Length: 324
Image 1 (tube, helix red, strand yellow):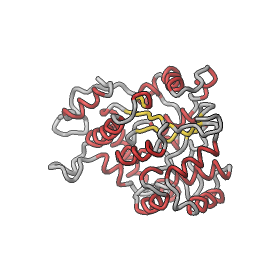
Image 2 (cartoon, rainbow, N blue to C red; image 1 turned 180 degrees about the vertical axis):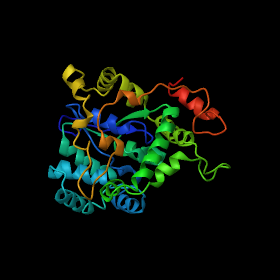
Image 3 (cartoon, one colour; image 1 turned 135 degrees about the horizontal axis):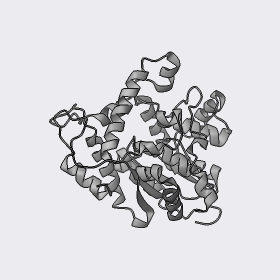
Image 4 (cartoon, rainbow, N blue to C red; image 1 turned 30 degrees about the vertical axis):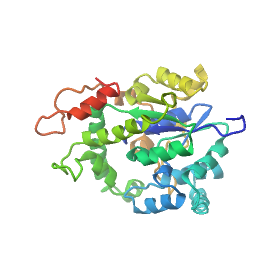
C-alpha cells in the first residue's frame, strides 16, 4: 500500500446479538478508523443484487448503507440526504460491492473503514467475497458465550414482539418481528426437532461458518475477540486491537474508543433510514459492562424445558474459541 491508497478495511465477523454494534462503534471512534453501520454489501456480487435482496428481506436491510452514504457524501442524515444517497446508490447498480466500499474508503481516507454486517457471517461465500475484493483486509471474529447469546436472542425476540403493538411511531422504527430473529431462536425446519426454541443452533452455525472461512485466511490477518472482554476490559482490549491493526495505541486513542455513543450512527436515523444497527444499541448507545455476565458451558439451559444442556458440538466449538 502506498501513502495515497485507501487503508485496508477491517471486517467484524459476528453472529447477531454478539455486541457487534457497540464493538464497531468503539473501533470507529479511533482517530484512524471510521465505523460504518450495517451495509450488508457482501451478500451479493453487485449493487443490483443488493437492491434485489433488500426488497425481499423481512428487516430494513438497506437502512445502514443509506445512512452511511448520506453521512459520508452528503454530510448529514436527513430525509433529503437519504433521498440523495438512494439516488447515488441506484446510479451504481452495476457496481460490485467492492467498488462501492472502495468509494466509501476513499471518502474517509486516510481513516480505515470498519464494517460489521452480521449477514456476512451467514455465508462463507460472502466472507470470501469480502476477502477476494480486499485481500489486505483484517478480520475480527467477535464471539459471545453461547449461553448469554441464547438468552439475548430470546429477549430480543420477545422485545420486538412487544414493540409491534406499541404506538405507531415506534412501529415505524422497528417494524414487524423480522424472520432472522425467529430463525436464530429456533431449531432449523430441516432438523427432526425443527421449530423448537433453542438458539444454540444458530450460534453454532454462524460461528462455525466464520471459523471455516478463517481457516483459509493467513493467521496474521485475523483475530478472535470475546465480546465480554471488550465490555468488561475495554481499555486493554481496544489497546490490543489497535496494536494488532497497526494503529495508534496511546491514551488519547484508547480513550476515544470508550465512547461508542459518539458515532454518527449511534442513534435512530431519519425517516426512510431509521435503523442500520441493533435497535437496543440505537436506543442506548453506551458502553455497558453489566451486559457481559459470566457464564459456563456446563449445566442446564434455561430455555430448554427438559433441563438439557449444550449439544456436544456447541460445547466443543465454544472451547475452541476460548470459552470454558
